[in-house]
Amino acid sequence: VQLQASGGGLVQAGGSLRLSCAASGRSFSNAAMGWFRQTPEIQREFVAAVNENGDFTHHAASVRGRFTISRDNAKSTVYLQMNSLKSEDTAVYYCAAANGDRGGYYYSPQGADAYDNWGQGTLVTVSS
Image 1: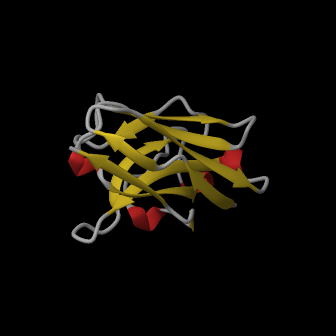
Image 2: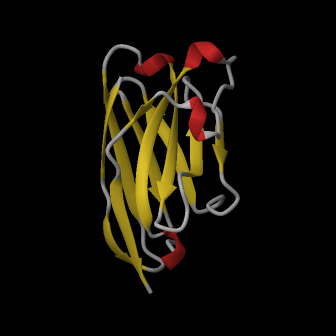
């Protein structure tokens, strides 16, 4: 599956953005999807993941209650709704796909090594 992330930009602290990740290929509905972020100081940090059916999610403690991952299998797209943004959320955000056959119904891995395909990244800058 090939992934194309979009939706990044410059936003003031306290604002919101919604990232999208469009997938091509027939395996999207069989893939767990995740969002990660990276800064010069922090390598691929887990943000959120969703299982292939979209009804089970994980969110990192640092974003829980502010960010929400979701997916629309009919549109082959995964989203990351980001609210109450903080300056420390500034990063390049990547979407990624993991083969759902590796896990059970709730498979939504948090480790970057579990993911096979990565999008190109979209930059989110939060000004304080």
